[in-house]
Length: 229
Image (cartoon, rainbow, N blue to C red; front, side, top):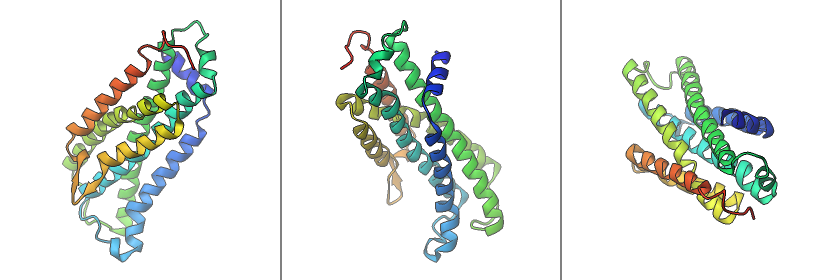
């Protein structure tokens, strides 16, 4: 399986993804660190490190769930539409294994980029804050540990959530349907209305994540018996 994932990674040109990840990191840092210092109305938008870290991790999760939908569209939906998937299914490798390798690659990339992006943004924000004093003091050890666990759990749940759009994409064999459904789903989970957010109840993103993993399994459960259209 690992060998198939490596081959898939070599086959796909993902330079656009890594460039997009860097742009996303810079954009979140700009939004959370630099813009408040330039706009007086936003200067007091965040009163504590906890609020800043929570907002940052939310932005990162939203961005990379959408990026995962783009990967699903490129690695799976588009290959069905271009008929290249039918060529792959002629290989002496079980179809389930081929599809699973693609999905595991997408999930792995999503999880790793969410973790790394959060860590990089947090570190850069702390460095920026030491010069600009956006928030007084320094985050406590307890807060950093708690935030680390939260990033890990939210990252795992985001991996599952990123699989939900696969259902909509496979039904219509549409890349746009995959991406649009991802935007709608992650927006509903991460939206903040008067301080209330579904993602604040950790059981909800975890539940949606489990549903997403189930959808991923169901999407290729019968792939050995179904003809590629």
